[in-house]
Length: 425
Image (cartoon, rainbow, N blue to C red; front, side, top):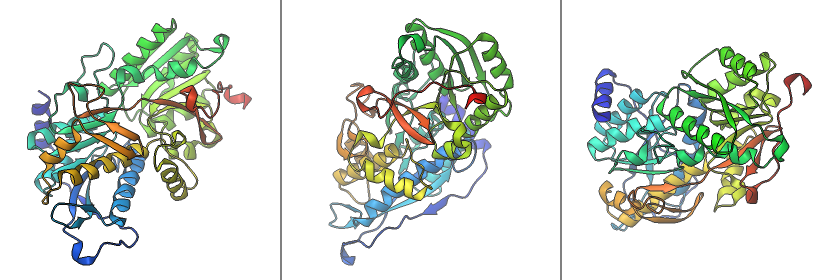
């Protein structure tokens, strides 16, 4: 059914030019005669739309990883030559149907056989469905690997994908992240009355159900559960419901642009819960840059933190900070690692022209060491899903426009700070 839906989407979408880039880098040491033809990869990214802030960081990570590989001469294959990587970029416009159409153009117009993913589950579901139809390898990250808690929704793990590899977290467990963070507080300070507001999407339903499960499992109450449409410009009705219900903590899955709107309107209404936790929308460095001191005390999930010390993470973070006006990232380590894995798999497969089926077979069930996410093992978490690699979440808090690691405790760089009222800052 999903396939038929996305085919209909594709038929409804017009042609749009694909942007092409070939990241450069320092001079390589490979002899000119040893340099073979480039390996062309597709890249699906939110260049425009509500996810553009998150898309920018994802794009930076992909292009940086490719530039680093190219700077070392590229990928050495069985033809005895080193092959650099060229990226063909397609804008998903932060919209699943448009993302599906963009992927089909990459495949049919540009002839790509391997595609790097977007950074949202709905976008990746759409793209993966198209890749399944054409037998194209979709190297995915940032898409839920499971169905969530008591959810029938089709996340990556239940789609029975043969051409998609995914590195991310269980939605069922990710909803426990704000609860774990709150549990680090003294018992008498823990918020027990929660308000949840989620995008009205499968992604939102999945994480919302997961949060509700773990909040109630802790013996706390979900006093208000609201859904909203992405791109909402007025959250005042939700804020009013939360105020009237005495909500002490909020949890949301929200786009970056909407997250900025939400925080600004909370301030305009002079309402601040003790704890404000969000997925996706509170990630980007530009979130703190745009809001300034108003971003302080706000918490977010994280699937990468340079403080953990995985290979090359510190250096990658330093490079990101240097190119982003001193702001750091919680996202770039994962897409950078996805490129590292794909490059290693291409090298292991050995053939040129590259056979995407052989590359897929190297990834599925494969182990990849030394990445910016540490050692990545596909098929370990779900033995019946060899294309899935699990990555546990962390909890961070913005303070002074810098991130403090709150959870897990063994990685913590500080302790959680409760939000004061806006007029008392």
